[in-house]
View (cartoon, rainbow, N blue to C red):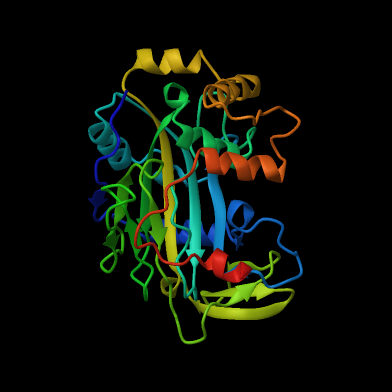
Length: 320
């Protein structure tokens, strides 16, 4: 099995022409608020989300024209091969985060794992995370390489990460972030976005219907139900672009893993066998995997570590 616990690499001067990225950002506006796992069940008419906007440029069935400068980036691919000592790198995702006026941190987390046959498109995210922290599915996990690239230096907006594990203090990449990328294992390494300025007016909240988009004078504005909430030049927003790729040590490993996908029945069977061995009365079924009591109990049986010195999450603060 590949070893992927090394500290990430800091890559500098990633793009010779940043204007290409700025053009892409404008072309694929508007951007909408992040929600989902960290903000479930939000009232669509209530201001319950921070100004953390997101958009996919590449996913399983879509590639935004021009995003190939990230998807097939030679530096990312070559550095991933060296980082993982691997022959096969399969780029598959590119997405954008744009933030402003967030006084707390983002969630301290690892990215959701992918397993052959199981990913967020067909498996509840809580179950994917339980699969990760149970360590019962390691042989099915798809190792991932992640690169996070930043457009500009802004007020705050650093990234804390725990290369020595969640029980040791984090390292921070902050300041001098323009046109740099952090490449490594964000699925095995906890990381957290720091507070993002400006900080004068606290965390500004929007509804799930808000949008971020550029105007003709190159100002980027946040509109929410036809009201302008915030306006600033693009270089005053924290803009990051994330790239992800599947990693295989060689073609033989790739072929073996791809030929042995997990079904949901496999997942339930493996968990139930472990629960029985633990002499725990809980059992999973296709009918109960969305039940709140099941999710809560599974999180106690297969707990996720809490990294030391993590900042409060803005999503937890909003819910309080």
